[in-house]
Length: 419
Image (cartoon, rainbow, N blue to C red):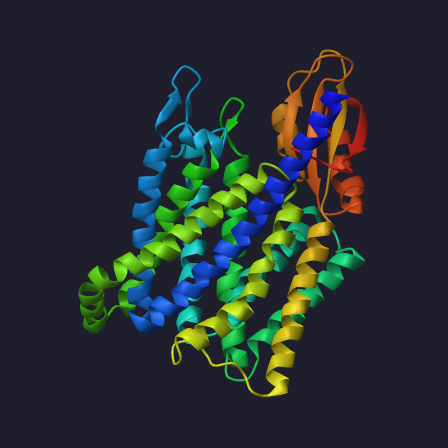
């Protein structure tokens, strides 16, 4: 009885920690956008100077943090402080040739998206209008997922796409924020760049750099950030003027301590996000993390009260508030509905006698997140992460079943999960 009580209490604590991490990730992200808007408009009112200062400072901060996380705690088992964040992390290391191409491509598209982010941050003094656009990339990712598996969206996915799109348009076309042309630029450049970058990051994460191992998330983040900065800087060279250089040189010593705050918030938001992903479903992390969209409204009001002239003053007409609130609700509802359509499960696979190792073939199937060779009646246990039940049945499971050597399989969907 006591052991059962301890298990229940342990599960409850784990679940509480999971929700806290997902929530704090969204909160930290919202505050980082808030301080970006503030610093831009007060200290560095130039998108190029601001982007260069913050991104290169972010890289230096990330290197310093990873050096600290590389401090060994158990040399024999290749463990360090960073192992608590990612079990695969031991120390800073150069990326393998197998993933360097994906890292460079991820950096190219992330660099384009980052420049668009800074441009939007300077254009709008309304935090609640900036944050929803960062979530629009979910639509591109889902469309890419549909193209990869040659499938059509389910009704709930189609409604989610419409809800997020309609919500972002409502927020973005609120009077005094964006015009339609700028809205298209933001949705295409920022959200599109983020989505493509995430695609190449995911592809790099799935590649086997040595037997049974993939690149860890922390080193992946470091090297993508490096190439992001290099690509972003190269893109900005034709736009850099003498005035930009002068502003950057004069203001950087003053603004650097201020920039450390959003840089720290972004870093620890990512850490909390990675920790949450290690303890629960990505769908719930995305849903809980959407609190950042809600926080955008009170943060904008707070900024307008504390720093008049820096942040947009609250709208006085009912129509503007109605558009903003309705758009925010639609974006959140679409994210939650889209996230909840994700399903996870395990597939037990039996091979024909004499079949060799097919782990590499199984890992290459879209929707397969993990493959383990096991003893007993079954030869492999496969972890699947799929958009919906129909996609799993028609696409992912069909490809597993058609893999040469597979003679029997059994599927078990996850109904509830505690880390």
